[in-house]
Image (cartoon, rainbow, N blue to C red; front, side, top):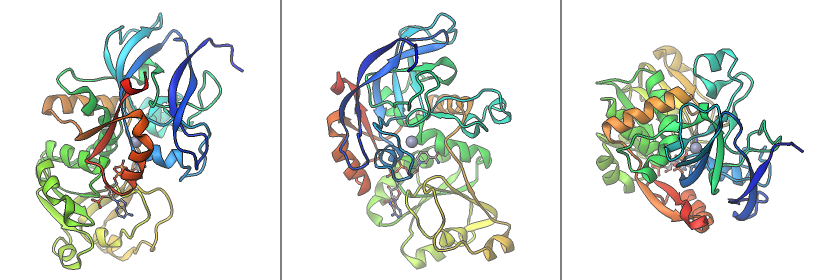
Length: 354
Ligand code: NAP
Ligand code: ZN
């Protein structure tokens, strides 16, 4: 066991992959020199929280306390903290630590840390030697280098999902140089998908949504989509062949991506951010070779990039569309998320845990 002094705080977590999440106590370290202690006000609910709680990806260490879309107020700072002070409104996303020395970290790409970044939950806590616990809790203690500033004009609860859904879609939009006039498509209208639409529009792109049914068409238009294509309708799919510069695919489960690749323009890229694992059916290389098309992947975003996205959202008044829930509603909310019955991100009011 570690020698570091800790304090006990309330949290909500899963004791096993089949257990409902329930209230439990966890330990948070007392602030060390570079740490910021945050009283968590709101926490977004990402589909990754559900994947982790239910061990969909393997490797979950129990108990598992999810939550990586954290916003709150600073309640204490270490003696060497220079960026934040008590009372500041701050955010924490998916990363709470990295090696800070590898080539990736030196380029502000902590999400690709060659020694592995420390996830906000289910990561390896370098201080306490156990798994990290996420934002479904009263407080979190984080190295100031991994703490973000939330623009003051944004609604705090609705800004929470920017910390994961926002930056996960912002990073590929920026990496593939989306700008005025780019043609972007988004697959799936959920937490990530709705942020992808808003951010791509904010960057000046024309945006198409691929959705499985027409049920979300009106919402998609309100969010800024210029066009909605029902992915299960072959004729509609044919109408957009060869069109897109970039497709951001947020679907969490295995699905056939070949029909989407044919909607890419020459040099276009289909970026997977949702599903992790082998593709089925196989990816056909013919359209890729004949059209210099790419299929790529992308994970969250670095800390500097997250701040850049937050500042962009502040400037353009972009936040998430949220449904506020109580901590105690989390299990029912997971079931609704599995049915795509969320418009478009659950956010937990952490006052319900106090
Ligand atoms: P979400 O809110 O549940 O949205 C997913 C959307 O995908 C749904 O709204 C639905 O849209 C579509 N969909 C769901 N099941 C589908 C299926 N079987 N076939 C086709 N489409 C389906 O989830 P999210 O929070 O946006 O997360 C999406 C995925 O990204 C999750 O797997 C999550 O773990 C992952 N993720 C990755 C990163 C990263 O860094 N790469 C970061 C965060 C999350 P329609 O109803 O419109 O079809
Ligand atoms: Zn997430």
